[in-house]
Structure formats: C-alpha cells, structure tokens
Image (cartoon, rainbow, N blue to C red; front, side, top):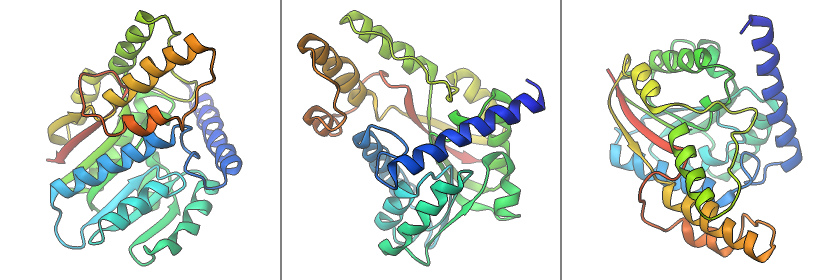
Length: 270
C-alpha cells in the first residue's frame, strides 16, 4: 500500500472515530455499541493488573484510549497507578479530558497521540505497563500494526507489562461457525478493522516480549449474546438489544472455549 493511500485510509478511520465521538457525546457506547462488553473488558483489565501486583505508583500508558472511560474506571479501581491516555482523535481526547473530574485528576492525563508515532506523544519515557483496547485493529495494515508493537516495546520498561485487548481471526471464524449452526448470518469484520492471526501475532511480538499468554475472557459472553441470543431474536422476529438481560447476565459467565474474536494477551518486555 502506498504512503498516500495509507494516509488516506488512516484519515478515514480517524474521521470515523471523530464522528462516533461526536454522535455519542461521552456515553459508554462511544467506542462500541455493546456497553456490557466494554464493562467486561474493563473488569478483566483491572483483575489482570491487580494480579501483576505492580510496584507503588507504577506508570501506565493507555494507547488508543478513546473517550477515556475505560482509563478512568481502571484508575479509580487501582489508585496506586498513574496513567497517560493517548488517542489520535482530538474529539475523543476532548471528551476524555472532561472525565478528570471523577476523582482521578493528578493521576490521569490525556493527550492527542498516535500509536504509530509514540515518541511524539511520550518522548523518551518508558512505562511499567502499556495497555490497549481494540486499538491496533484500527490500523490500516499489518506493517503498521507490528511497527506499533515495536514502538510500544521501546516505551515499555524491561520486565514491564504489555496487555493488549485485540481481535483475532480464529475466534471470529469459530463464532461464525456456531452462528451458522443455529441458522443466523455470519458477522463480518468491519471495514475499519484488521484482525490478527494468532501465529503471526506471536511471531512478531515475541521479538520484544516474553511469557505471552492469552485470556479468552469474552468467549462465553459472545457465545451467549452473539449465538444464543441472536438466534432467539431471529426466531421471534425481534431486534437485537445490546442492553438486554442476557447481556447483563452473560458478563458473569465463566470462560470456556474460544468463541470470541476479542482476546486479551499478557506479556513481559524482554
């Protein structure tokens, strides 16, 4: 892909998120229509960072922080940590800045920054922990994705933690296989997303990171909401409702199998 076409694609994706931020005006649905999925992502990130037992006043870089909702919720749950959230959407960052009044001012900062140009946003700073939540899948090519991983590695302290929540093709395919089994249409990958293949992901990140493990924390949730509930809606002729009781219940299911494209990876900087 040429530099010109890459820039046009990246700008188109940025415009999409700017428009979504304006449309949702800081509601929890600004980064996904599935608000309960977002809460499940936040819950899992908090549990994972607690397990890591970071030192007092550890620093966290949240790349692609969006409207800052997830960042502030994690910060409220983990008061020892200090956060910098960056996003390339000015509109998202404007909304995020309004969240600093929630009791995290002084421990959380938001600024415009691009994961593909981290030095501009972070200078030479290295962080104890770097997190992302559906950020890298919004880059326009695999080259950009793995260049971003390399830049994240440069800004992660030796032994530090990198915890991305991203989407993978294998989970998408297994989910769609289950949907076909109950007679509902496949869910396509959206135009602005580029999902990872697990083997390629591991091969590229293990250049910089060790102890790579995955958490399929959303698998049961997806099976209940995207397979069972979707089939029920089709049978009854009902519209899907992301705030349905099934969504509220499914967040508490124990994980099983790999029916979700959304996965968490946990790894340490070499």
